[in-house]
Image (cartoon, rainbow, N blue to C red; front, side, top):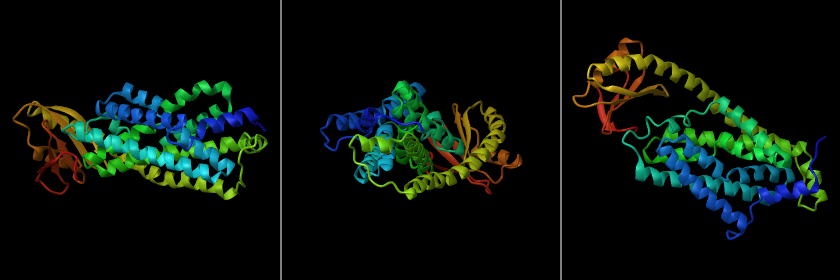
Length: 339
């Protein structure tokens, strides 16, 4: 069986276990980089910039305490498990708070309805869990094998940790609470996958035995610990399965609604910015100059084309939103994106 040597075991604990003192180099590095990553990610999401968001992924240090949790579980070091869990939780809350601050400052009139960075992180699916499991495995593998440690930047880009938290904070400020919960679920999915795969990789590479030889604190590892980790992954998979089905339905609904919306918009020489579907609600964003086409006409057109059971949320230039529920011919004006 493959195993790590004493030097590698020491290197792993030094890398993954952040010192308790807030003034220690590892602690100041973690919190400093985390705050910067949160600001970069929030700015990237608000500006809908893929490059900026990728930069935040590379800078973000959250992978350290998450993999640290896996290592602590393998070593059965309860104090380190609690500390790593506290760092992950505190770090996540800090990024969400930064996202809320940026949302209060720079939320757009349509409450991120047409933002691609937001849309890509509010519909987690089973495929996201599969990708996170593979990425977490690579990350743990890179730690036990120093000769492939240069893959870690790629792992940071592949796994989405800080951007979903920024999206959560931004959406909380504009009242999109369900979508904020979905982006938080994406973060939780990635955390569960990294901890699970990290635990398995560290066990396979015999980290416990080597850690004992190097004089590190090693407790008694229970099989129920591994069972609990697997159970968390399975628990996360339940809403992801539901999300996968929901995303498939929403994509079909959006595809059916787009040509109807485009035909409706041409009557007033307006332009369709986006047509999406979220949880069975058709969300249409349009741009143009007055006079605006009648929202009730779009509601009627959707009804005629077999979408009478879908609510309509119509975002117009200037921030006005018309809400046209299914089963009625009337539309009301309300704040964009709010329920």
